[in-house]
Image 1: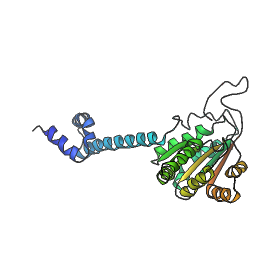
Image 2: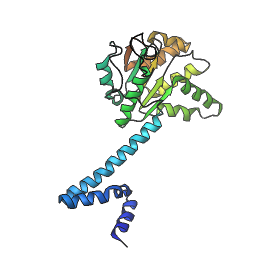
Image 3: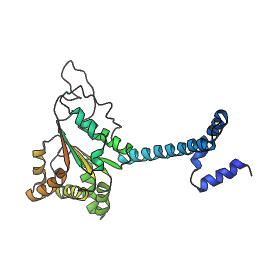
Image 4: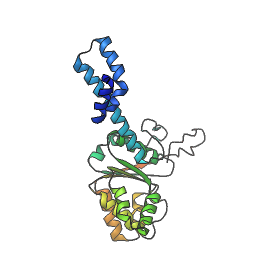
Length: 252
């Protein structure tokens, strides 16, 4: 048997068959540059580490279900000078996710809330965190449907398990039926276990009345806001900028 065939068999058994992708290149490089055996082995194994890291990042990004691949680098902070750039860049380091803190982003439609939320989510994926993005309506719809087919606990786990849950457009429409309780259960299940980013067109003062019950609202908001950063964004809409400023669609 040829040595490469035997090596391939061993690498597959060790689940290191990806090394074969750069083996020829690294072997030639070792010969041309007279590399020490240890340097050759380091470069070969580092290729495998980078390959695995890239594959895992791609998996995390895919499972996050972002609407768009947004980055903090392509957000136009100059469009609305009141946007707290320094604070958002600090949050984009995702230290708040490590601490299991929350982030609430409020402001009128079109000022960039969804862009910022997904950009921070992208950064969290890069940092190795599991992330799930969903609109508030889609999340509550899934939880409502799960009550009918007896999969509620499993569906709830989908929203409480990730390191970071991004709930977009909370309060876009009134909560109805069991939705206030479902939202409370998400907040309760994640409290001090995982981070939440919530975006809303409504001010924080308008969130509690959505629950329709003062006690439930108090319990939910207390858990959400206990360890929370609040960002209020004021300014013009990227979708409908004032005359002369030019249209720069950057998310909601």
